[in-house]
Amino acid sequence: MSLPTDSNDPSNACTPTPALATALARSLWFRSAPQALQSALITAGREVRLLAGERLFMRGDADSGLYCVIDGLVRIGAASFAGKEALLAVIEPVNWFGEIALFDDRARTHDAYAERDSTLFHVPRATLLALLEATPAWWHTFGLLLTQKLRLAFEVIEEAALLPAAQRVARRLMLMAGGFENTQAGTTLPTRIIKVPQEDLAMMLALSRQTINQILRQFEMQGALKLRYAEIEIVDAEKLAALADVTASDVAPSKKGRA
Image (cartoon, rainbow, N blue to C red; front, side, top):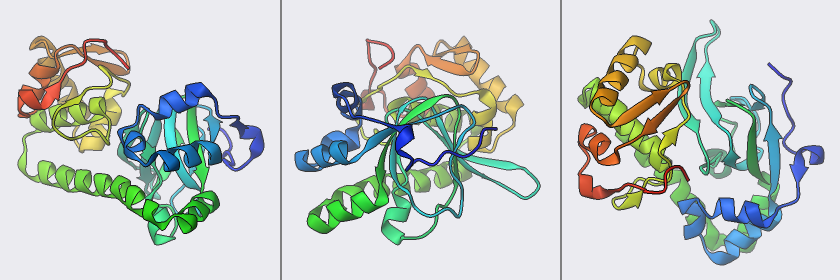
């Protein structure tokens, strides 16, 4: 494990580029934000690079701002004193996170580590507060980002209580393929390749590794998925939607492959 990275260290930052603006525009939340806010965030933020296994922040740390994964993966979870890990999510491009502390001005709720070499876009807390003080109406936009996560949390709790394991797995794969912010009907799947080890998927769903493997193999035999080392390819989004019991018309599968 590498030493923690200070995301406020200018040596870790790089100048925003047109490619960065293009990457951020893949985020539904960012695209839906007022144009002036989009421009302000791009101007105020900077790219931060983390090595695989490097810590971004830990539970109890002071709020350092808002992040978006541009490339790579970030693990969000917690560990007990005995070393047992609870994995809440694996954040893929181009999902934003870190907004809870912006609202309640409290410490970080969970740990965040780079699953692999990753590039993040970071907007420091002080900059965010200055933007929001200048334009209070923008609080609503950040509130939408927060409520997206709250709705997903309620759905996950309900699914864990009511749905069989196979349906929960299919729904989580659909969610991850669409992005944690792209959950409404008619959304095209941004990616067909989900870079997540089966062990991580098992932890996120509180299922055994054996159960996850059996379900994924079954989905593969049904033609919905193709399994590779540490990644899952969705080869038929409509079949996966049916396995998740999602109305097929709610999913517009991309024909271009991975975004």
